Length: 245
Length: 222
Ligand SMILES: Nc1ncnc2c1ncn2[C@@H]1O[C@H](COP(=O)(O)OP(=O)(O)OP(=O)(O)O)[C@@H](O)[C@H]1O
Ligand SMILES: [Mg+2]
Image (tube, rainbow over all chains, first blue to last red; front, side, top):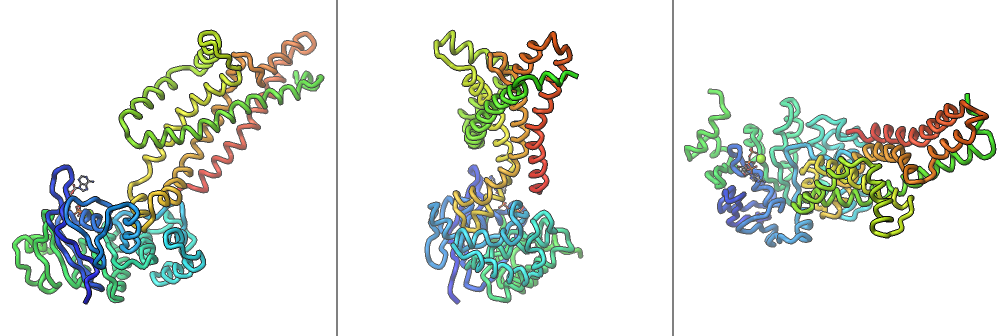
């Protein structure tokens, strides 16, 4: 399969502290890569570097073979092609759900309002939130907000979707409804880079897993290799923190 | 009760005219304060040390100085010391704007700093550029926070314009005093009638603004 996203020797420092250390990764079209690792290991920073929310110190990011330029204008263009959903609820509080979803397609992609709304309604229906189209974000539960955030990214037809711990701030009973949406996207063949602490979900959704620690990829592998047969001590002890044996 | 003096001649019209002067001065000052307050507030949130030092001193001066002292300084100072001939109205607008810009900029700075970084980032992540992010995401949120607060400022400014009679501007309070003086003999109770009417006029001028602010606050609460 063809390669859609390639990261070459990416390094990133915050005030001289190395957060990402010479990271390389290549993601194929339709592949779901899950990144796990201890808190502070640089997972969020990695995703943020990919869509240019953080500057990078060294290395390069290639999207569909083209180098992602860091100049402002091209960066907006790139971000249209890379969707991102964050951990905290990031809907626009002054816009209703339908407006939240259609803002970017109308303003950025210059689509007709009716056309964008039609697609938004379809997507809302798909995640079971059609009845909330006129509600405001404050009227939605955390799980509902995150589902809206996902389709707000989807309506831009991104080539790659970055999900950064999108269930970490949710009450446990809402985690499932959000992860189910992500699972269905994976089945559809979407290319995704997912950071999560939900190991059962990671196993179910991933084509490949990456264990990040100290800004480096310590181990990677298929779900079976990764969970059942971890090679490094590091990963073994990390996975142990999630089990209750 | 003293209300009868208002029916004499054109006394009531004069009173309204006085209120008009007060509103006129405050509205011009409010307009100036909003425009420049927003600019200064935006500059303050850039966290540039020079701008911050300047604005801190400015805000402190405005807070410490009674408006009346400022009025005297500008009106008499400019005319007598600098030899510039400022009319009382212009002096009043300068002083109220000086005060309003300070307060407004502080409100803007507060509203800006209250907007979470994630709002900028999620907007950018959708491919919106800086301009689009401000126009569609940040500024509407700032306006929603700002309007109730600035309406409060506006009503305070309208009330404070009564100070301008100290530099000879004939606004509503001054007209009221003149009417009371002129009718001291014939209507000894004029003071009550006149001030009660002035109270009502101020109320009529400020109440709708404050109702509007409450309404918007309710409508936009997050
Ligand atoms: N803007 C910043 N300025 C300085 N240091 C930062 C900044 N953002 C992140 N860091 C630091 O970089 C390191 C990596 O942070 P990052 O948020 O990428 O970790 P993470 O793996 O996503 O952690 P978590 O699982 O807790 O979300 C941390 O030590 C963090 O303190
Ligand atoms: Mg993180």
